[in-house]
Image (cartoon, rainbow, N blue to C red; front, side):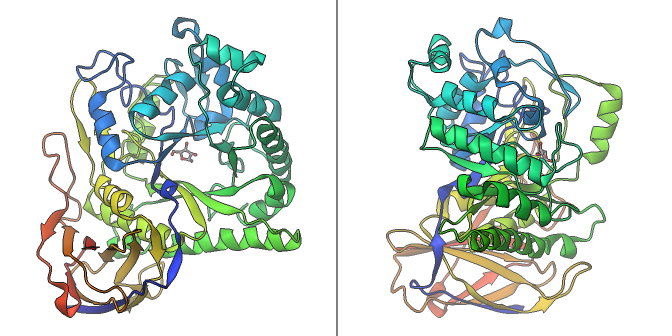
Length: 499
Ligand code: AHR
């Protein structure tokens, strides 16, 4: 048994938790929208063509916000194509994903879906091929009450009430050579500044997210954040971070250590925000929106073959990673890292929601099921509320191929308004269980203590339509009297101490 120790004190708080850290992402990509959330003719489809079985699974995740409609897709997207009578909407080539976009689902339909799924929309505007004026126009169309040409157009299209979208992305990954309309940091910073100004003049209640560099390992990283923020700091609220991990060489200890990188990434971007703040003698703090994060690598090869077979198709099964048990462990570790940075990460969107690198899978005409990664997200979203406590963790450590001093046990803890505490803990050790000694010195008594464990003996075990429950959390007995919790080898644990 490994030995680890966790000290929590109710007076030691990192920050209140912004619920939007449990957000998600729906892009017009692959089968996320078409044959994903939307499949008219499916036995579970509602009157608008949205699958009710999928909505139910989304509700189960308690997703507070969903980024939409891209991603790379948005950088060539004309929002006007997606409104008005469906039969008059144009089909367009999507240069980002080399597919054809039918525009059958657009702004109005997605806003309606979001209501049904009990979530809010985080809308991304195109700053690739378009500019500040188009950004302002979509805010006016979506959020202005009425009495202007654009807001009246929305009303004419059937939405009397404004959509009231509160959070807007100023483009997507604008430093990436793969992006339609790639920009330099200065070009982007200027455009983002003017777009943000005009959008906020139209609706002062909105918040906006500026694009950070598309990756920690991009040559543009760092300089991009500094230069673009220097140009738009006063008018933006968040900087975006995107991070995906994979295990292509089947080195699981190294894969599970990837959150060392995520933590460094988050802290580095926060420090650049603060450098610009200092340089500008500003009182305002710009926070972080980790608006794409997940595991992504399983489908890479398959996608290359798909493109060769079917260029410019619609609803191609792109980016359909089938997630295994070890992916769920990494997702748990990523959630722990997000919680431990709750003072700066105010928005985070698992990319994506359905079929495309997603916790929910569907079969056209068939079922909908939970992938392994559904579970840690669901439990964190449901129980990780209130404040994020400062976890003092002592654990044995080991090095991996790319990381030094990786603790076997990592954990985050949250406390609700009523004093109930939830501990999220992962034991990275693939062989040995760990005894986690919990010192909960200041909390007093709890009425009930529960412990669920997500574990599978096969790190590569997956959930399928035929066997949807192969990997899922189970309740295990716990007796916290002596403060000791057993974390099985390779496990995600949720310990709830209820007042
Ligand atoms: O989520 C898939 C893609 O990953 C997004 O479209 C893009 O922003 C990122 O590169």
